[in-house]
Length: 307
Image 1 (cartoon, helix red, strand yellow):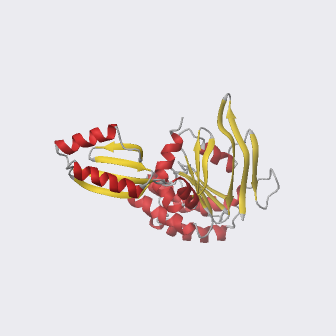
Image 2 (tube, one colour):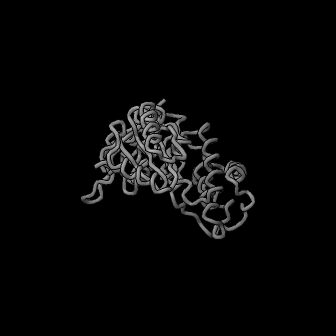
Image 3 (cartoon, one colour):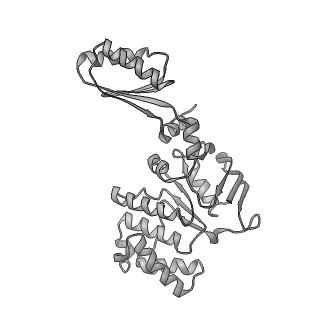
């Protein structure tokens, strides 16, 4: 069931068009990743969806609300850098956020206790926020976005301030939250998007270049690849250098690294047989010849670097 519909959404700043007539839908119960390089329009789009920035033109329709109605009451939002009051304790801030969302004092207190435990900072509930680490502030920001049980949770780079352990813990929490609410999050970590989300929207220069279900996009755009690693003797290195200068017709593109090459091919089985024969005939010492497929990151790089 469609929760949010965006049509021809545009935002200009002077003579600059930051978001250029984009359109998409978000279905209830889905987790959607908004991807794109810096300056692609992700944060501007998020600010319009959350009501923090008025669109220049276009339409944002939330199910259950009349066109143009304020739907912020059913949105939870975590900006990339949460704005918190350092003189408050974590507990005080979260209760305050709940009250601003319309919860009673009792409801806010109950929700506060459970959420602080859930995001992993219950032990710091009575400490002043000024003494929190960046990761703790991010967790508190996530708790305030959830305090009123939103229908749509919007997160702008939710794990950017976390160390690897904290990032993994928050990712696990988001995996749980997928079962409870609809999520839209922006990220630069393509692995996170591929691991967690159901749908992706890849933005480039203010427009959506690719969008849809991850499974469908993966099937439509993925290509077979061969990963070759060689020993670093002079003969093997010279062979690889020469081979990459004029690769066979079955190779669509190549990328070399210090120890070998990554080959995007047309027919992986024919390519493997042919390449194996060439390696043996030339007596190249190789340590790995692996079959795989291009990833969401490969598609992302192809889209954002397209001329």
